[in-house]
Length: 326
Image (cartoon, rainbow, N blue to C red; front, side, top):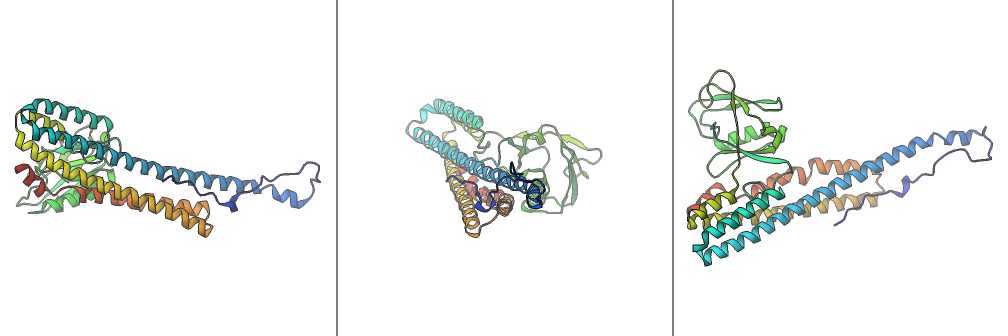
């Protein structure tokens, strides 16, 4: 759906000025001249409205591109699964196909290493493997973390704190830096956000339970492994049954991602069209419509609910482990 900016008929003004040949001492005509500042204001509002609508259209286009990337990857994995069922002896050739698909996914930049849609381009996913923040400990500890951009946070880890609690507390603080947190099927901490925030080691300081006491310790995070590269390695090594299970898990997750993206795209389109229709019916000014659009883009479905939908789309850790063990 192409969303066109709203142009109110009430905001069209003629440029004011002195009519050639008219007397220049008439106060009515002199008073008309300052109206040009109102024209500028209307044009500025209209320009802002165009920009906001363009931004909304861009986000819709991004959602559609991610959805198409998920569909294309799903189809190629279905083909790989069929070939694996029909001729297991060609596992080396299938490993090469998996590597080629991994290269394609990396090049598009729309899906991450686990084949989940990225929140935005330029985002990277890393694993924290050298510090275990998620396992329960009998003692409480406070861990301070310094990021490459100068930001810092203090994480209070209570005694026997659950993984969910730690993820919630850490996620709330890192969200301010544009970083999302989760855990992978191995129970490792997975962080996704602007790549520049992972370019340098993070500085950790603790009390000797999870992090050595004393001066801050620089710790480099590991790039999230590409699941298709892992699959290629498994196929090349002849671990056919395991990779079949991995394929089943990936296909199930991709289908859920597709549904979540389609739902998100439809909701955003409906909201934008509803705003536009309401503005037309109410004779809403460009400034009022612009404020409504700003609220939608800042607090609406795209920015707040997309992460929730994607989290819901992920298979549970237990289900993935069960599939891979099957």
